[in-house]
Length: 123
Length: 106
Image (tube, each protein chain N blue to C red):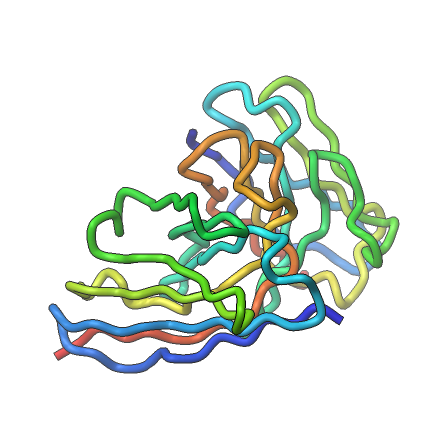
């Protein structure tokens, strides 16, 4: 069974940093792209970032470009999201998701998703 | 690409036929996915490529397309279908989601 388990969320002050992790199991981790999607309280879904299976290609939403860095360690079957210069508007539950393909490709889809880890940016 | 989803909420009864629409701001071919999210849970893939049913998803769910308009239909609403539904385009980056449709019990 494919499973994704996020960790690393918490309370952080504005301007601070946090690193999220997502451990994958039940599939060949390096053969699939991975993505992060967030959901602010009582709001919709916002795609944040994606990474190819090798880690060589990355994509970011404009709202996080230059502040967030996606990476992966295929030897540990783990996806990361390093979040710097955090703002109040980054407050959300962060989900990791497995892509259908090795690289982000038109026609891609996300399945499954992890259970999410909450991030609160507040002083 | 903007994804406009409607309605934002609806009330329906068990057994009803429910239709949710998502309109893309430009052509996305059939690169449109539908997800279901229950309170406090992660989204779950229902439909990919506009009309392909994900494995394990009940056949009462179906998707269709007409140009830049996409529709998710629940043929006979079941108690477990009360949830929020989101569409997603994966034609181009940034990948974007519709605003969601909350299906509530009438």
